[in-house]
Length: 174
Image (cartoon, rainbow, N blue to C red; front, top):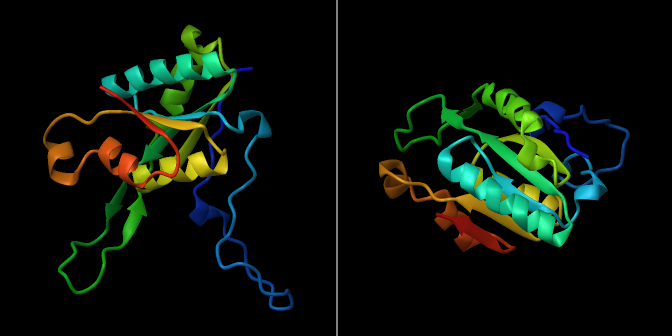
C-alpha cells in the first residue's frame, strides 16, 4: 500500500460559525488521520541530502516495527512585513510546489515499496508541524536530519529545537 496525501492548511478549512449552535472548543480539530498509520514513524522530508538520510533510516525503522511511514513536508512561512518591534509580523504561507514534485518522486521510488506510507503537506514552523503530525498520528517517533551551515547556527537547528520540545522520541540523523 503506497500512496500520498496532500493535507489542506488549517486556515483553509475554517467553517462559518452557526449562531444557533452550542459553543464548542475554541481550537478546530484537523481532519481525522488514517488509522492504518497510527503509531507510525513521522519523518521530515524536503528533498535535501540530510532529509534523504533521515527518510532511509525512517523506512528501516517503520519496516522493522511493522508500522506505517508518515512523510511530512513543511512549506515555509514568510513575514509579510518587517517586524519593527511594535507589532508582531503577519505570516503568509508561500505556495510550495515542491510537495507535488516530492510526492511524484516518492511514488516512483522503489525503496518505499516495503512500507505503507503517506505524504502530508503542512505550512508553518517546521518543529511545531512535525510535532503536531506526530500527535495526530500518535507516532512512536519523529525522525529528522541535521541542519548544516550558517542558517542552523543563526536560527537554531530544527533537530535541536524539536528534541527540546517534542513529546515523543526524536531521532536525529547526521
